[in-house]
Length: 355
Ligand SMILES: [Zn+2]
Image (tube, rainbow, N blue to C red):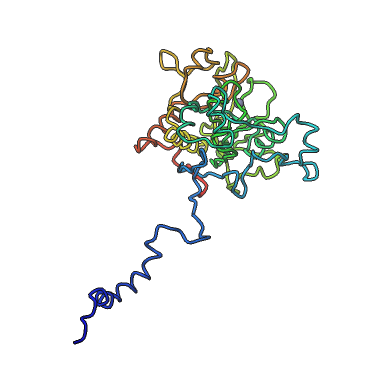
């Protein structure tokens, strides 16, 4: 008598078409990427403690083509034969332009993070301010040249006139941009030639002109070459057509506003930072009546302040980001983005470069 066929074998036979099908389906269903396959980036990610977070704004990282890398020791814009540390050391006492946010940490945590081992939770405990600067360089390329090649300083982010965000260092690093707030802050340099006493010689007339319709636009001087702006055909226009005059540290200053593209990227960056590092509240320094404070904060107030602030709120000798910065508009927009609400754009015709 023939032995009955084992049931499993029968099942195998019965199911074989599905098995073949499964073989075809497996690679698509599998969560393991194929070796060597590329993980696509969207182009809006910032890096915090080695992790990527979306901003919804165009971001060029220091590792990307066209990026600015603050980790490198050599100078970026001098002739290559002079760029290395042997020549650079003639104008800089040491190669560091940044260090670690270890001030005030207990010894065991310093030992842990000194190798770059910040966890996001640790960073969340330490970082609670977002400092806004203007760069007095006019473009992000010129800003990086000034900071990295000449002044031995650093900044986490630069926002160029077309709204491109450049990240030059992981947010875990302590960038050198805001003296007493370096350990606890993230910094951003807004491309803008800066604020000046009215009716005194200034670069404003070299950097701004009016077209036939009376609309102000940015005229990058020929000394800056093509300016290095990522959107090659971009024409930058300040959000307000005329110069803005206001008092900073008790002194009257005049400047042109930032572009709508910069406001949108700044709002998105602030919203993303608040999501990742919640101690960076979406606020700005105000007095008892709710008005913007336009001078350095008293030491005790600064110590207790968490949120967005200007360089001039930290240092008496600074005026950036100047009287044009629209704090309420920018923080309203950031809060709306964070809450998923709609909020007015900086301008009807704000044109972001593609992600
Ligand atoms: Zn500054």
